[in-house]
Each structure stands twice: as structure tokens, then as C-alpha cells.
Length: 379
Ligand SMILES: [Zn+2]
Image (cartoon, rainbow, N blue to C red; front, side, top):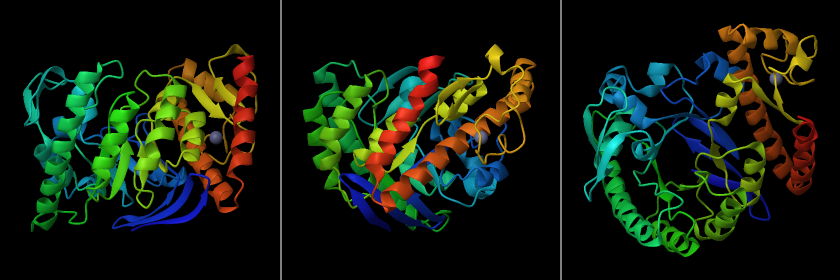
């Protein structure tokens, strides 16, 4: 059940109920690729940093430990001891970006595992079966994510096939949700809009998948090399053709500024590896812009990463100490930076929801973006 509580222009403030609890949107999903957020972040940590939805990768879990293992352990929720919503991607993106020697056919994709080179086949039915074994709250449709520089003919053929795959995903999901031994019989399915940077192909595809009455709709294949302006333009053109009364998810995006722009264009689900990946390299987000904690100027800095931040790092530790940990390659340094960054993103989403509730998102966004420039200009 998804209900819009408030709108400001195209921006949506919504409430969604799932079998694993409620989701308040706009929301940033925290990416735990192999059922853990990289940087030694535990499920207990997720409670502390305000995570609403955890995201895991189907391809990674299929390769290791294997989705059958996860199913035997009672599904992903039990396995990682997380009782709130989980979204699993379809594996498509990883198959097309990580795996070696792939061959795309109408039935699906043949490829080699990046772990041990073993030959694997994945099509719409296999992806749905794996995600059903993982028993996530929300499953994503199996799609091809064509390169943003692919030619028009290739993209059109690919999008047509993705549409046929989507119908197969929907049929398979319905069948799986009715099976006796399925762990989550209420698994939701989101479709994915593709079409690279060809707006007419994307609009036509958005119209076609909107008719399929899915539980939510994602815009995929962005943030893969095109400029920010091109991405915003595609959102301006495509989001109006996706059902407003269903959740809208912008996959793999992005920086805090990208998220603010996405919310303004009607997006309410986001995910990105930036906060955890940057945190592992000592790059931390603040309301004044991004800081590099390896910088010499923090050597004797007794302040927290950000004054007033309520994250587990800022409540106790100084910039000087965290900098020392990072330089000494102590795991704690990376962990504290990841916790701060995820808290920063989750907290920004809370602020966005409050601003929408109060009808002042536009002025909030302007002030937030202006703040980010302060350090980015200096560093
Ligand atoms: Zn903090």
C-alpha cells in the first residue's frame, strides 16, 4: 500500500506499508551488496543510523553464498537479522557490468561468475526465483541496462526485449508468491524504465510498463556516464509518464545534490554506494560540502566531523582521532566514516520529508545546495 501524503510541485512525500514494516519516502536505501554494508557495519548499526530500507545484490548473493543457502537459513531477513524492508536488485546490472564473456539471448544471459569463472545462466524466471529464495520485501525486474553510449538501434531492441522480460518476471512472481514453500508470499515487484539517453524510447517504454500495473517503477540506466544535466533532463521527461500513485525509484543515484534534484522531479526511492565507498576512503559528507579527513589540517582538530551531528562517530570522536585511525589503516577509522556518511544521507532524507510536510521543500533545497559549496570551493 502506497499513499501520497503531500506534494510540492512534482515532489512526492509518501507512506508505504509492507509486510516488513512501513517506509516513509523520500527514502535513501543503504546498500549492503553481499548482505552487509561494506565497512564493518552491523545490523545493529543500521538501527542507530536511521536506515529504513537495506538493499542487497541478487547477483552477489547468488554467486556467494548461494540463494539456496539463504533460503535454507530462513531468507535474507533472518540470515542478516534485519526485520525491516529489504530491496533486492535483479542481478541484471551486475551481470552486464561485472561478469565476463556474456551472451544475451531472448531467454536470458549466459555469463561467467566473477568469483570462480563458473558458467551461469540468468533470465527473468531465474532472477525472480533467486529473489524469491532471498525473500526480500521488494524484488526488481530483470532487465538489460544498455550503455549510455549505445546506438539507437541497439537500445530500441534491448528495451523491447526488457519489456518482454518484464511480463515474464510478473508471471513468474505471481506463480512464486502462490507456492507453499515461498518465504515471503507478498513479495513486491518493481519494473524498470530503460532507453539510455533517448527520451522518446524512454517515454514510449514508460507508457508500456505503466500499463502492467506493477507495485512500483524505477528509472534505470542513469548515472552510468551521462552528465548530471542529461540525467535531470531524462527525469523531467520520463517521470510524468510513470504512475504517480506508485513509488518512483531512481536507481544508483547519487550525490546529495542529485537526490535533492531527483526529489524535486518526483522520485521517492534512491540508492547509491557513494556514502559507504567514499567513507572507506576517508571522504565524509557535511552540510558544508565533502571533507577529506586525510588532509593535514585535521591533524590536531578536536571537533567532530560535523558539529551537532548525532551519528555514532560525531557523538564521541574527533577529526584528529579518525584521521589518525585512517592513516594507521585501523578498520575503526573506515567504519566511523561510513557510519557518519550513511547517517548524513538518512538524516538528509528526514529533513527532506519534514520540508515537504511543511511545504517548504523549494527553500530547503536552495539553502542545502548553497551550503554544500562552502567546502567544495575551498578544498
Ligand atoms: Zn556524524
